Image (cartoon, rainbow, N blue to C red; front, top):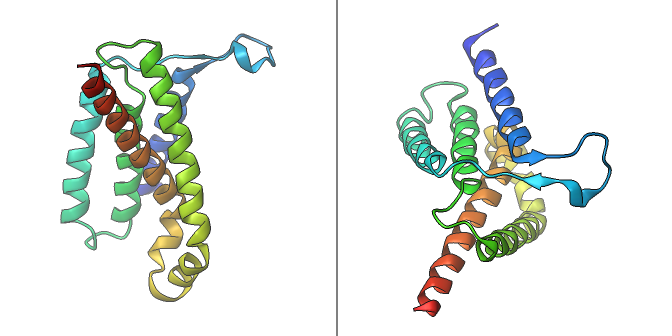
Length: 165
């Protein structure tokens, strides 16, 4: 196996492990209400920010240098954004959970609307102009969902804190 394949397997295991930590379900239960969401400790937010900064610096410096630098940049950028998005806040209460839920719904629907409306142009770009987009298209969608979620969440949190004062 090449080093890129080891990195892809590592990213796959990391995605699976992080996701399985967040969602806990009672054994043999088909009730959706039995799913308990857990969030990462607050420290993981800073680990995600550091990872995003390092990966963005690596991606900008090596964008065309290596064959798989674009894919690796998106993989680890998504892991960093995932850590930021699903880390606890300093004060984690029901209001924060409500803001999280609404931000997640808005980001998901907004991303579907944007990619759905731009899909014909997106296919044109894949087949004619930029062939590397075909390899990272799913990663781009995940990056957009997480980025829009984070902007919505922190903007709603900022405006709600401003209105409380």
